[in-house]
Length: 124
Image (cartoon, rainbow, N blue to C red; front, side, top):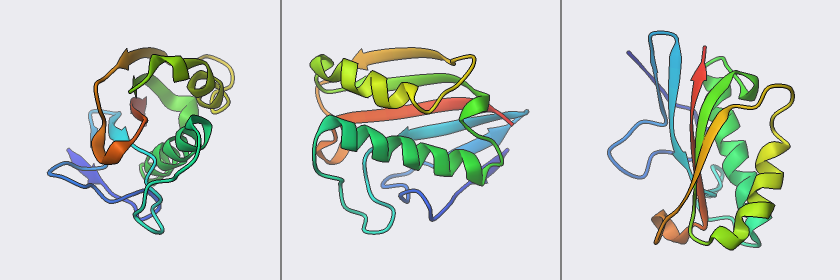
C-alpha cells in the first residue's frame, strides 16, 4: 500500500488520504470544490463547483501516474438531484472513449457546504 498526496489538490481535511495505491489500483477519496491554492470553497454555480472537483480529482490521479482514461468506477454525491444534468455534462467532458462505471446518489449534506463530491477508483 502506498499513500498518494499532492499539493495540486486540497489537503485532506480529516483523518484520510487523498488516495491510496494498492495491487494496481488507485482508490481516490472524494473531492469537493476546494481550491488547492486558497483552501477556500469555489463559489458559483454547480458547473463551477463540479469543474473544480474534477480538476482536484485529476490532480490526484496524475500524482499517482494515472488519469481519467484509467478510471474504472466513480461515485457522485449530490445535495440536490436537480443539479444532475449540469454535473453530468461537466463530468462527462473529462472522459472520452469508454466511460467508467458510476453511481450518483443524493445526500443530505456534504463537507464545507459543498453541493457535489466525487470519488473514484482507477487502474495504474
